[in-house]
Image 1 (tube, rainbow, N blue to C red):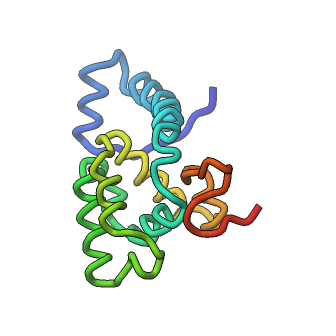
Image 2: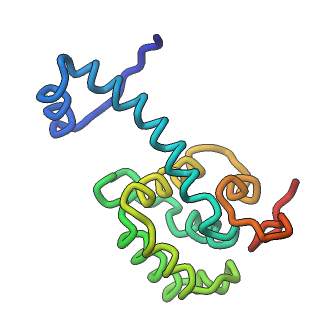
Length: 154
């Protein structure tokens, strides 16, 4: 098994110390479980949003510190940030999306879906992905198999 070093806050350290034989065994279980949970949760999100809606959400959270605070990764925070971006920057016009429809979709997200959606958004900003290709991972598809929203390069 490979070894890595992670930084955790006191609260997380105490959780591992109080709930596992060792902090390392707790952190290992958490890291392995995180990957499995992320995969399953992103699969549950796939198809909810159009490519344009996902692109707009990625745009909203460019350089956001919220992405670094899991407790803030709720649908209410996503909704508030999205609505502010629409009011202040006309995000819905830039990405040619319906604000109300997107808000309704955001409201339906569970805490875990919100957390992993924001983690997915953060991953975009941490890598050198092309936006059109990246949103293809989760974008909704029409009955004829074509992506909705922005054009996706193949």
